[in-house]
Length: 306
Image (tube, rainbow, N blue to C red; front, top):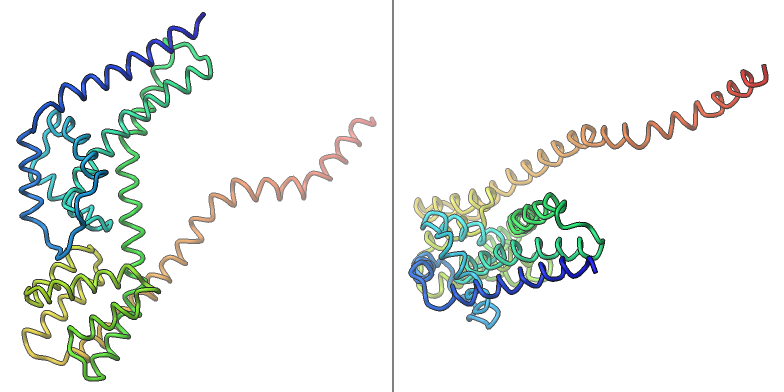
């Protein structure tokens, strides 16, 4: 029976992976403890969720890869910043991401082997497919994180214009900056939840005793959006020099709308170039067949009749 050999190899690989995990996860590594210390030191948010059973399982899964491939402090800081950009503020977020990387590197090759067994492919010539599975497993978490970062930053940019308009109205109505931020956060919770959540975190940090400057800088570092970074810099300067906050926000809102219009015009100009390849591949051949097809058939009949 030719299927016995692939099934045996699959079972051996699974048992080998489980055995390696049981051996390596026997104790507590120094790298893991150092990552926890860095997470506690670099934490910039006011309220973080409690550790869940899923997070503890992910942390256990991440211990082997942290021991086999130790992570430097600079890489941990860079990864934590990228996870903050994507909206993951938990102190266990780097551990969970490392566990996802490890799980992806194991699952995709095993799924490739299982698919090859179902298709009846010989195992000797399946090495390129296995390498493709390893490559997909390596790239999938990175691409997924980049996609989440782009989506969240786009949502923040989309909701910032409405937030600035409401912030201007609130400040000009006599509210202070803290009360205006609370008002914006509560009013935009249903329409723009991302920007509402960020403003709510700023208000929470101010309420627990952090200075306005530090809370605004944390907002800029936490989101990674240039428009929000410029807004925070403007508010910090207005608070430092005592200028009118409402006038500064109004001017910044007008410049922000100008930049949004310029981005839309730039995207519209790029659309023609992006549509060129699909038109050349799909539309033009069909158009040529519709226009020249009858003439070609008539020529074939004419020359065939002779």
